[in-house]
Image (cartoon, rainbow, N blue to C red):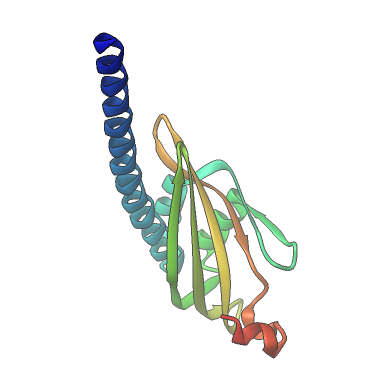
Length: 159
């Protein structure tokens, strides 16, 4: 009887310690992903295709609120050609969730600049999905809302 109680107590203690270790790993992963996402946004702003390429997965795609889809190659070519000159490409209200080998960053992105000679400025809600690979975390999918400026005023007040 005492052996059974001791075994149950040890199993419980190991489960608690395992949960604490997983929580610590998750917190570290959250910091890593947040920093990687900041690095990616800075690379976009600076048209730094090499840094973007080091973060984007080979099968990366981003889907805009309009349904328009862009591949990794399209984004890298646009950065190399400097199609867009950014004045701002910063995010706020960032949250990072980690579930094993998958992480999702959600943030509000403010972007402003000139796209092929035409000025633009908009804000979107963005979700960036990262996966852990043998070579480190990679950004695999992006999803953006419609620009908040184009939403009905009632939706804008819910921000």
